[in-house]
Length: 600
Image (cartoon, rainbow, N blue to C red; front, top):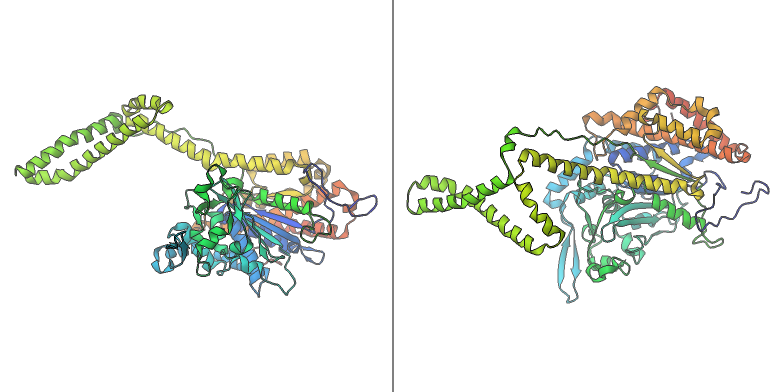
């Protein structure tokens, strides 16, 4: 809206370098749910439940949410909500909230998944593949842990629904508020995100994938089960195996593997050797490997809306007034601890070379055992020592032949490395073992923690530094009010929001009760269960999502008011602000006041 003329502004932004002032505040909201197991699912549920609670223009603010994108644990809440919203004829948010909250209790999901993994009768789905010669091959869903969880999701959370059934729902009825949802995974052919997206208002599953590998038609993606998509989004490395397309997506209503393969476009996929990947299976894993917050998906959707052509029903949509990223990861990092070099005093007498010599001399022992048996000289001892000596001898010759082949095969830098191998072979194990442990520990720390934090930092810098996002993007962090983040939080407010912060500071400073709850919530593990000690933590994580959403909405309105006087004159916005401030005071006194009753 142009403040001087009160006329709508035509938004056309191509380069992302133009600041966009929300034309109609909070009419179009996008949410992103980060990964992080049940911690992410609970925090996301808390954010949704607070948006449902707070009224805006005679409806709950949740009714203004148009788009949700999610990764890993956040996909559990996203998928649960969209499937209930579109396919449950008796849907009500309080019922959905209580049901998901109860199903995350204890180890229910874990027990169901392992029960399925043990039960042979649960693995009957199969598909058929016909090769070029007409030979038929039966393709079965692999019996492994990630597929067991997919089946548990299907049974416990999503009621066997497919993407197409969500897209095709409500043809004749008034459409629910949520227009699109997106589930983020990572595909291993090209090493980038792979998106599954549903446009429920236009009744089709989008042909997303990514720029290199995507669906060629809507029907192929529509037959996929929501549970398998969520499993692909949440199968984090080391905890689960990759999920394979199309093999692990077969089910009783989707049995043609040929159609699943032919429903993909491979032209730009791994162009170095297209023949090795075309019409072949490919692996999907946790979307958090590349984008744990789902930020790229929401930015692409926002760009598409901003640049839609006026008058074209296919592209003309309202750009997002608010993009709220709900994130349970953090920048906190446990320092690397130096390994204690006092590992096993007995190991100082052992080296790998001495162990090799033992295996080497076992050849002599093996010959002696054979001789004692054949000559009937102490045959009992011969029989007792035969298997150990044979095993050690086998290990020696296997290692010897493989090492010899490796030396011949490797040249250049590897040949130099082999020349110094003898140094490590003769190093005492009490020195060698700590060296190996420290390398493994530091490598694991880099891959599973430091690299992901660097990716997270870069993505937020990219999002929040773009002028086009300046007045619309907001981050809802689980650690917002933690004691560890207090100094940085206040400094950020003083640096970025000094225009309004001084006047609002007395009202918005968190109480000790809030800070204590957040400190507990942010330290909950990223598991898919709540053990006995964590039962109360689940509700604390949900409460952290509720109160953090409340605070960030207040902050967003204060920022809008600092942009232009007209926001201070907006009656609906001011009524919302007063409702938020009232709830914030209640959170200060009792952070869990709305856990059991959303309308309390």
